[in-house]
Length: 125
Length: 506
Image (cartoon, rainbow over all chains, first blue to last red; front, top):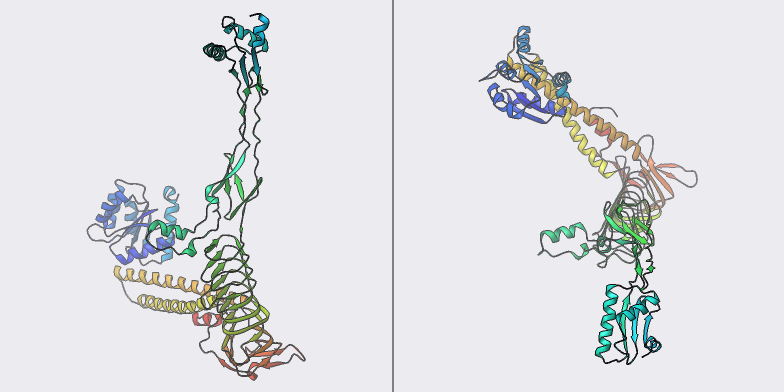
């Protein structure tokens, strides 16, 4: 399964990659902000995306809205420090499928990834 | 010339096999009367049908006769066809089975570098096949073609006999007649029987005439193995005569009827049991039991289970036995540095060392990760995104470290269980243990200073001390210290100590 990680922190991307590897997913591409992700995603054709909110150049929410304007199906998990309810609702309205608040444990992220994939039949298959 | 006269002078003769008819013409026949029609009439009387070929032959005969001025003539005028009998079906072994099998190493070296000299020992003359290879083809019987005699009667051809191969479970016969080896081994063919034997029998020595042997099944050698040759078998190895400094390995048993004298050059790797009359100057790793009849001299042996050698002496060298060891003598009366390690599996001992180190590191990592996590959690007040990321990182490290430590603990407990089950200190001495012999057992080193006369058993008592139990008389139990200087091995590593180092109970 192809998975795109969008986060400006290399450490966070490494942690996410390690969690994905434990789940058996190794086909991973990294992007350091929304703009970078928009340039890489069409060719990579991700089947899951983990997106940070606060990033330079283009934030995660703007990226999600831009991506959803052309692709309605790719499951997206927002991984962010934005914990307020209003922000969560804003993200979900933009097209996010699941939400993980930092700090998170590897087990929690792993659980959210599995939940999200289970709800997306094409991706789960 | 009267009709009667010409009839006598013109004859048609049919060969006894009826495959040829000849026109025989006597002398001075009137050419006016010798007409093709006359000859055709005579042929018809015999039942020889006219064909254009036969008419041509008759004309040719008459012309020749006339040219020869009426000299007697014999000329073939009709010919039948002999039947072509069918051929019997048969089994044809493919060339690869008949050719010498060379090891892949040799072949590869030839392919890559023709200038490199070839080790003649690697040129094996042994013939065997790989599993899955086509080893033979059945050549189908043919029905043949019928012939006809000069009268047009059919001469029946004999149909070839069908060949039916009788393969055993080692060979598959495909519908197209190809015979496939279902296992690697030596192809055996006799009459209808075709099989692949997983036993290779060498009638003589292993030397330059045979080259090194690498065979997937059992190898039986009628004589010995010469210096620096190698024999590797996927099954067992049986050697009837002496083995020099050879390198040998097998997955199952190794039987050296007369033993090995390896001059510290040879080595043995045995998956299961090793049996030999004697072992001299050899390094051997034995998966299960070692059974030696006479002597183990200056050898390094690692025995995975028992040493069952009640008639054998161990003189010099270093022998490690995982479980029970029964021997006649240890060391020599004149004093010979001989080491016997009881209750040890060398590979497991190495693993214990690695695990103790890895386990301690994992525990240390867990402690550090938890300390860092607690430090970050103790920060008061509102914290920013950077703090959240640091906490995520610390949680990840703490969880990863905990999982690694848990794995190490499980491995430690498994190892402890394995060691507990597969090792013990139990030495039966039928003859004697001589001074300068050293026994390592249960964390003790016992260096013999006096001769201990058997039969007796050296084992651990309930307090973990080395004792001697005499096997005659009152079977009294005496501390080993009576015959040996016994000292605790401070660096001794056992599975219990490994668990202690990792902070868990056995």
